Image (tube, rainbow, N blue to C red; front, top):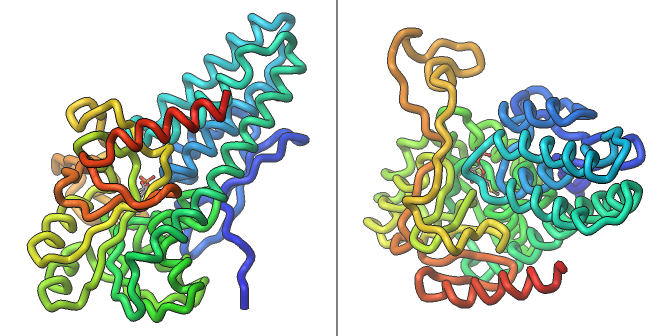
Amino acid sequence: MTMEPLRPILFHPHIPSIEYIEQTLLPDIYEVRTARTIPDLAEAIKRLGIRGAPALGCAGGCGVALSALITKADSLPEFLDQVGSDADLLRKTRPTAVNLFYGIDHVLTAIMSSQTIEEAKSRAVDAAEEVIDADRRTCHAIGKTGLEVIPDGARILTHCNAGALACAEWGTALGVIRSAHEAGKNISVYACETRPLLQGARLTTWELLRDGIDVTLITDSMAAVLMRKGAIDVVIVGADRIVSDAVFNKIGTYMHAVCAQTHTIPFYVAAPLSTFDEESCEDMVIIEERDPQEVRKVRGCVTGPDNVPVWNPAFDATPVHLISGIITEYGIFTLPRDIETIKQLKKGKDMQRH
Ligand SMILES: CSC[C@H]1O[C@H](OP(=O)(O)O)[C@H](O)[C@@H]1O
């Protein structure tokens, strides 16, 4: 039975509003919520109601378009000023996933050369819908590219959630897994729970069970022994920002990459070109540090003393030498070997855009 495509964020310009699946409540509660203001949207992003790098790009782009549609202004300069400050509010939500800034800037760029407010509104809507449509196409292309690294019978380890819930649909790492399943490959997945917010336990298992894909939930600390036992053939994860010398992804990714290298297991990252920040390097990237309470309590259940100091980085950096390949919509690349190719592809896309 083919399930309806899972689309965690929908833009309704005629209302106007942004509809999204509230991911903090999954897997036990499936609730669709609506953001009609920029502060509401910003809060949804901060609490990870809306989450995942490509989905943040969609939320950022749609957020700027929503601002354009609801902003009341007597002049174009006043209008652009208001939309610009709403865009800044969205920029401040989460610092690491580069897609958020790509989505925001893509729509802002589209409206900057407008001659009237009405023209700016129309361009904003078109540009936001372009971000979502492009991500849908890109995720399916990533899935197709990734088929070559998933042999029939593959036992795959993944971390966090790089699925449809993290994108416009289909997913990146889970997009490759979905494409392999759809191609009839007999695959099985080990999903790491991904402390502290449990995106793997709550979201990846939910997505794969929904699609009838063989999935086993493990704790993050169990991954190494599965690799040592020879029970994992390939590791595939998503990304939040890819720079010249490292890949930023959910905390725990680096640990899996080191273990995979120790056990000579291929370690792949799946991500769209929009996740590359190719002019930057690891030391230039801000890693989001989140509320210590996220580690001391899980969904209200106490897991640590209320007064214990906590360190809670949301991401870590995996040096590119630990990564077998980066699966994109344009092919599989390795860094630093392919950095110039990535730069040319990005330039080409930018030229297409303007
Ligand atoms: C398809 S990219 C998903 C990427 O984003 C997640 O972070 P978060 O749940 O904090 O938004 C995680 O790093 C995933 O790999």
